[in-house]
Every structure is written in structure tokens, then in C-alpha cells.
Image (cartoon, rainbow, N blue to C red):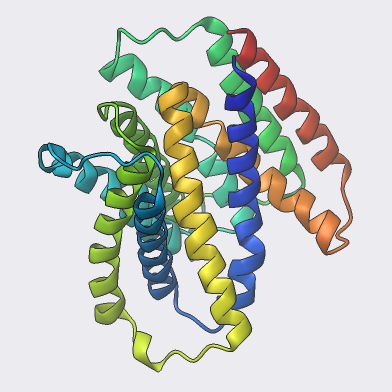
Length: 290
């Protein structure tokens, strides 16, 4: 496997893992749907600007036939998971949510097997995903004992639904014809924007939100880097490798979140975090050999 693919995988995991810091800085001042809408809109504008100044411009001719795909990807990648995650986390804690979202690679390989039977899935690829999921469970080992279905069933169903939605979007992205990652994800985020913005005004009151200048900067970073740029990289990774390989980012995001908390905030690095890091790296090594 090309080193660039692993650099993309690690870079995406690090960018998405760092978003926890920025979300924590603004979440008490801005409502969730409004924040998601702002991220999608800023991400759209970022990729539109990148395309405008790109040395290699791609014609948009013929893209009208792909808008049904962009709509489905936007709904499955950004809109549905956001609603389900926000709803589900009212019933379960963030550690449990992270473990359930770690099932994305598992659902991805199941969908690949069903809907793309011609795509090869070596045994080592299955092992890589299973080992990685084991590493994710180790990461949250102290919290697993507190997991209970009593009164939390809706939360589990919601998070698993989000995982299924993410996995389905991966297959749709992979099936897009050869085209610029900038244009493809600009269109996807545009779809998410026009869906989330009305939802924000229906269920929340965006115009009453007041942010400090620092918080405005944090929201801009979330939109530009952790929506626009990272989705462009994500699309590049999917197109270069496979949906199953790209789904491994779901193991790296919480891991990088914890590691960055240790480095930046001085949080204590626990034994299970160290072991989880080793296990997840082993899973990537197994995946490379496949």
C-alpha cells in the first residue's frame, strides 16, 4: 500500500480527532444543528475557493447527472448521522458512542460484500478491521463495564444507524466517476448546507446566538479545516484505496483525540490508551499486507 495512503489516513484521523477541542470551545454558545450548518457552509465556500484558484480546473459539464449521487452522499454522510448522533447521545455516553461508531468499518465490508461483490476483500482486510475494532474497545475499556441496555436501547439503535449511514456513503463516494475531489466534496457539502440551514431555523434560533471573536475563529477552523479540507482528503483516500480502508479513520479519530488531549492539555495517558495505540497500528500493518 502506498505511503501516501497511510499519510492521508493518519492526517484525516488527526484533523477529525482535533475537532473535539474546537467543539468544546463553542458548544456551550452555539446550538448543534446551527454549528453543523455553519461547518457545512464554510466547508462548501472553502472548496469553492480552492477550485477557483486551482491550477488544474475541471469542467463542471456533465455533473448535472451526478447530483442525485451528491444528494444521497450529502444526506448519508452529513445530515442523517448528525441527527442520529445528536439524538442518540442523549441516552448514552461519548465512550459508548465512539465504540458504536467504530462499527463503520464492519458495516462497510458487509456492504461491499453485498453490493460490490467484484471488489476483493482479502482475509487480512477482515482481520485488520476486527483487530482495529478490538483496539477501539481497549481504548474505552474502563467504560465498557458501565454499558447497559436498560433505558439506553434508543441510543444504541441511533448510533448504529449513524454507522450504517456513514458506511453507505463510503460506497457511494467510491462509485463516483473520476473527478476532482474538490468539486465532488464541494457539491456534497453544498447539499448538506441547504438541508441543515433550514433545519437550524426550524428547530433552533441561530440569529440569537452570540459568539466571542475567539469562538467565531474556532467555528471558522471547524468549517474550513475540519469540514472542507478534511472531506477533500477523505474523498482522495477513498478514490485511491477502498471504502473499507478509508473507514479505518473511525478507529483513529478517538485515539488522536485522546493523544492530543495528553499533549496539548496535559491529560494523563492511561495504559489502555497505549495498548490501544499499539493494537490499532498492528491492524493498519495487517491491512497493508492485504
